[in-house]
Length: 203
Image (cartoon, rainbow, N blue to C red; front, side, top):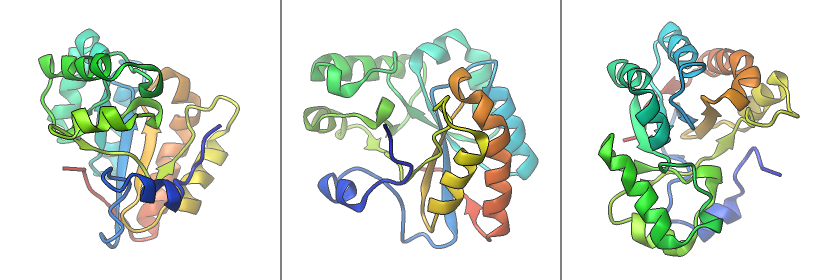
């Protein structure tokens, strides 16, 4: 179960996390979780290059270790990067110190001031530990591309129906998401551009 639009109540309960930049008129923030992997990330980079836009990639440390060349392509293209733990840990099921250690293991492979918890799940104790080093970036709109019971059309509608000024939008450069991503990503970008939005990276 997941919500394609983050409720205002949840944002109010965790105001110290970054959910959106609603004061940024005419701008949206495209983000990708779970890469880099050679089967999907190059496709995403090609689409972004085609439309001449930049995005923010929240990378799993273990994938960066396994696929350094793909990771370098993200950097070379001028996209932003963020930490997504080393092993895609579920914060709700992980001790706070283990979670912190796993997150910091990514620092061996890349440096960033951005962090996003896998599954969007993080405990207050973990937030307290990580906030000293990272901006913790959540999201406003979830495409749902990872949901294999969904469809490219549904993912596209999720993005189009819920994106507004300053929205942080999530797709995934993962194998699980690829069937939905390959059609819904370019369609979503085109529709948002036609609405007059521009795309920026998270800093």
